Structures are given as C-alpha cells and as structure tokens.
Length: 367
Image (tube, rainbow, N blue to C red; front, side, top):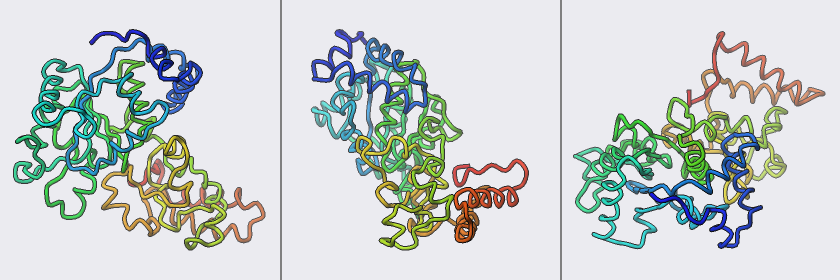
C-alpha cells in the first residue's frame, strides 16, 4: 500500500478545500474523539502521511440507511473519504463493477490484503436454515461474513442491525437474524457503532483515530467506542434544564412543546440511551431529533426495537436511575418552588440517593 503523494492537504486543496478548512476538519475530529485541541496538528500530520487503508463494505439484511448516512456526510464529503482517506474497494451500492467483476474485487482484497483491510458490515446476518435468507452470488451472508471479517484487520458493525440484529431480529425473528459479533464469534478487533442509522461523523472520527494512533479507540463492554457512546443523551441534552425545572411537554403541539420543554413524558428515551447525538447532531450539525421537537427513540440502545417501544410512551421505572419518580416529583416541586431549577434538581437527587442501594450506578438499559 503506497504512501500518499501528494499529501492529503494538497489533494483537498485541489478540490477547492483550503488549509483553514482542512485544519477545521481536524479540529472537529479531535473534538468528536473527546481529545484536546492540541491534538489537531497531530491529526493533520497523520492524515497527510498515512497510507490509504483498503476497506470492504458488506450489506446484508439492511435498508441501506447507514450507506445513505455515509453518502450524506459533510466535511469531508463521502467522495473525499473514498478518494483521499480510505480505498473503498468493495461496496455493492456505490461501486462501479457489477456481477462477477464485483466479486473479483472482493476476493482480491481478502486475498491480497489479508490482515490489512477494514471490513464494514451493514445489516443483520440470518442464521436460520443455514443462512439461506440472504445469499449473494451463491454464498450466504453468514459464510461471507466469516470469510471477510475473519481475515480483516478490524471489523466495524455499523447500525443497529449489524450490531445485534436490529429490526430483522425484532419480535419472532423468523430468519434467525443476529449481529456480526454473534455471527462471527471471537473476532479480535470488532467495533460496534449502533444507531438507526449510525452517525457518519462518528465513523469518520473512528477512521481518523485509526490513521492517527494506529489503533482502534477505547470501547465500552459492548464494543461501542466511548467517544461516541460514553455519555447518556440526557446528560448533554439541550432540554435538560427544562427537565430539572419540571417543565415537560404534556401533549404534542401544546405551549410546552412550542417552548422547547423536555420531551420525557412524550416517550423520549434520552435518559437511557448512550450517544453523542447532542454534540455531533445530524446533517452537518444542522439539527437532531430532540432539537427538532421529537423524542429520542433509543436506537443506539441494545435491541431497541423490542425494548424501547412503544416509542411514544414514557420510560417505565429504570433500575438504578429512578427517572419516573424524578420527573413526577420535580414537576410537583417546581409548582411551589422559588428556585425551580435548584430545588427541583436537589429533590430529584435526594430521591435517587434514597432509592438506590449503596454503590448503585445509573446506566439504564445499557448497564
């Protein structure tokens, strides 16, 4: 794999992207990775000198939502990611070759770059009846995943379906759909990036981390990178102040909804979902569901389609969190409190402390 010549910075400049914009992108990646701004020059240097990494993107039981997220990335655009940072050698949806030529592209990467490429998997993998419910060129998704992921330097499962089966695995799960980790057990370097879809900013940041540090980022016990899935949405939500003050939307379109009050009572799953959505947002940072007036559906949480539905019903009592009692009590206290935010939050904290045994941790469904 030859080094880049000329540098990435020069190539981006040829695309009309200035050095200032390039450094701004590197700063954005540092912030997304929860690194100090002092790492910006290190990221810029790594991006300029790192060799292009061969990447194989597999699609199985999916809606292509993660591919759509990838194609709609900004700063840099999808084209710049493909051409300048990675060598996307196989992707059924966007690659030029088709049929036998496409399959040769996949085989060439697996055989010529064994242990040197990254496998990205989108969609769940059916296992029932030998995996016959998803077959590509006569090979089951199960066999393809075992071969491609088993020979990869690292595997990234993008989206809820590739993580734990997602929607195809919900309810009766007629095809025996599972995520990559269950379909190909024992993978040494598996990163899970759940979401419906995953946020392309986080995927880009993960690639930048690998190029900069020659290593994958730290993960939680479920294999999710901590920089993206290390904080509850509730902790950083722009509506958190309204929660603490006892101000809640009671009905869609009511005055509280128009004023941007907390959406917890409308079914928002932010108090149990780990994601950096409030920080990176969507559509180049334009907005995100809660900011747009719709509650979080918990798509970053395990088995979300089974366990966070109904989406418009408030979360039941969560072990170790007590959000139901907190919301009700804060609302009652706020009516007569002078210092609404301070008093309400203090009462809520007291309720949690009193209700929890010593050493209890509030991790919601993700614990």
